[in-house]
Each structure stands twice: as structure tokens, then as C-alpha cells.
Image (tube, rainbow, N blue to C red):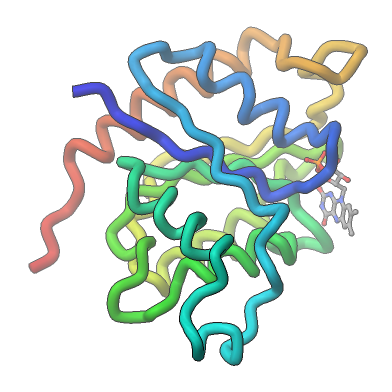
Length: 186
Ligand SMILES: Cc1cc2nc3c(=O)[nH]c(=O)nc-3n(C[C@H](O)[C@H](O)[C@H](O)COP(=O)(O)O)c2cc1C
């Protein structure tokens, strides 16, 4: 059966390079249904907001995670770490701790930067957070996209680098394989 994958972008910027990378994914594998899971309307996490039940945007956000077979996060790195909007979203999704929608959810992590280190530090932190909520993070493959401006068109609209496209295509195949062969932990 075809898989459904939720796409989360860790940048809210309109012309985000990471969003351009995420937008390229559906064209690389038409056997997968992709759905965007947006972060821009999520409130800042505050335990007080949970007391009377989740705000509506959070309920919708959690349901959209529940409804997909896996999530791919495409995120920038800020100050050698995870962008606040993404950490905020993952903290919301981690609650309640015993029945988080991220628990055992297959997750892939990709990142792009105009710089040279491909968001390696951010990806380590994203993985650390996902491991804390017991998500099934794809373990054996990393996509670190450095010098992203050389890999998109001059209008900053689309991914053009064929080598990066091939990496991403292979990554999608591995991610689907990962979803189909998750470790059994019980
Ligand atoms: C607050 C801030 C901190 C940043 N820190 C890093 C960093 O640690 N490593 C890095 O590669 N790029 C860093 N950058 C540059 C981003 O990679 C760049 O702004 C990129 O375009 C952000 O991703 P986006 O295009 O998807 O919005 C930083 C940018 C901002 C705004």
C-alpha cells in the first residue's frame, strides 16, 4: 500500500531553502503521498495551556502527525542547534508523554544550509529530542545539504542539483523501507 508522509519544515521563512528541498520530495517519488504539517500557527508551549485541553491548533497538529505513516523534517540550523519553532512543535507533539503521537513514529531528518556543515549540529539535537520521545528515527542515513545556493535555481524557487535529487530519491526509498521494517520493541 502507498505510504503517506508528513513534511515538516523547521523554517517559517517564506523563501526558505529548506522548504525548497522539502517541496522537491513529492516530485522524486510519486508512489508516496505527501502532506504538509505546518508549524506557523502553533502557540509557544506552556504547560498551563494543556490544563483545559490542547488548543485547537495543537489538536489539529497532533492529528496530522497521527494520520501519516512517517514524518520527514527538513530544517535549518540556528546557532549550531535546533530552531526554536521546531523544538516548540516537537515539545507539543511529545505530550502527553505516555501516549505521544511521536512515540514509534518513523521520522527522517534532512537539513540544508548556505554554509558548509550541512546542519550537522542541528540534526544531532533533533535526533536527541526525537529519541527522548521514542520516535523511530531513520538511523543509517543522513542528508546534510551544504552550500544550498549552488543547488537551487537563481530565483530561489526549486532544487536543480541532480546529484542532490538522486540522494533524496534514495533517501525516500530507504525511509519507506524503514517504515516497513521497524524494530519490534515489545
Ligand atoms: C539566528 C540564526 C542562526 C543561524 N545559525 C546558523 C548555524 O549555526 N549554522 C548554519 O549552517 N547556518 C546558520 N544560520 C544561517 C541559516 O542556515 C540560513 O539563514 C538559512 O537560510 C536558514 O534556513 P532557511 O533558508 O530554510 O530559512 C543561521 C541563521 C539565523 C537566522
